[in-house]
Length: 254
Image (tube, rainbow, N blue to C red):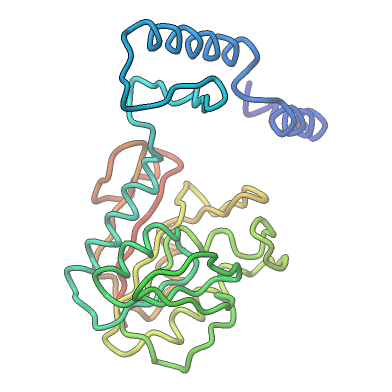
């Protein structure tokens, strides 16, 4: 029934509107969290005075949504970023290049190997051994066969959908793959991740999803060295289309 309802355009637009303009968490969850904050503050004041610190109402700084029973992480970013960093550390390149991946991952990698980050959005912070070049993945500012170690984690699926300020382009992912292949040096290593699904789909304007076969077709003639897949909180070795939407991690070599 849910699948049928999603095919009704007006209903789908209504759901999108509600999701965008509704405030989450809802009012009662916010109220409950705020009450817990006040109770904790009262308990803290009554628990005794530590004269090493000044405690004043003017300095209250509530963070009312952090009281969770589990450490709150995104399993996809956590698993794909650690996978990519491990691969780079194992291969020990003299220099690494990254196109558009999460800045935190790139920054950490740069502390082990000098790293150049390429993105359409300028990096607003500086760090030793982390270098930045403003550029597009569809027109990389490098010569053919120039880069020996290259990553682009959770990027290709977004290109051309306008989400991050890039131009609308139906073939954004295809152009990006060609550019990564072009600049990768002979015997160079490429690390990518993309959403995988039962068929090629566009979830406009969030991302695309690809089948395993299409990912490998996009990156011909590169050799597949390793592939991993994230489904839920699990990192597994095999593509499993019956499990539906997931994330594919690919180590490719030229």
